[in-house]
Image: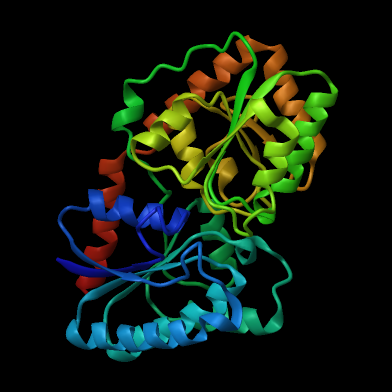
Length: 357
């Protein structure tokens, strides 16, 4: 089987994206499919806004040409529900439908998935994008219920998955000294970086020792990393963009994974960190609660709450038995629920049902 799969760049040196990580995972594990990747979305170093219009025009032309060269080829379209994606992606989806290619729309969270008050114009665009019989893939039963509530008909649940080979043999030991706190992903305000920064200040004020590591690319260069570096000096390390063995090493040295996002789907970085036994302290947004159970395999907090981040880390610092229990169960959760082989089989079933129509 051949398929075209759409996402931002798959080069982690150019683009830090959970959607790209999912796409690379699919290409690596669905070996029965010969994928052609179509890159859509700006690289981390590129400017956004109106400056993207010439590049967007070029991608539209390339998209039309690719579909013309591949008539009848299945299209796997990754669609994060951010404002810009909602304005851009339905047009690319329209071109697929007009060309007559079979289409799978893979939804990846975003602010507008669970937001109750979607602007009228964006809501109408989404209603059009999700109309018809195209299978809509979501990350959890929670997202399925939301989609069906809005009248979407053909919804399939496929939770994200991560490679587990390297994490399998790693055993996370109970930290004896200061906890190593880590964040992996896009470094941006919407990821809760302001609350994370304030929580670290609070911990310092309480004389709670910790080491801090950030890995990823800043959305706005100089907004957060220099502030962390200036305030926490020898206790702070910025690892830049990590992938492969460097990412594994980062997670092996992280005791607590903090993700205080304002919105999410099902973050790949969360699953990756849990697979290495990092204890997640994460906001209860998107489909996160389908994986993290508060007090069982991690700690759930509410968004926009630096004090909650502070209290969670302070609790883990004071109670290493709690850390050990949550760490052990975090790893078990990922290995029990997120099998790469099962993921590949489930996706192939969706493809095959579509091909039979």
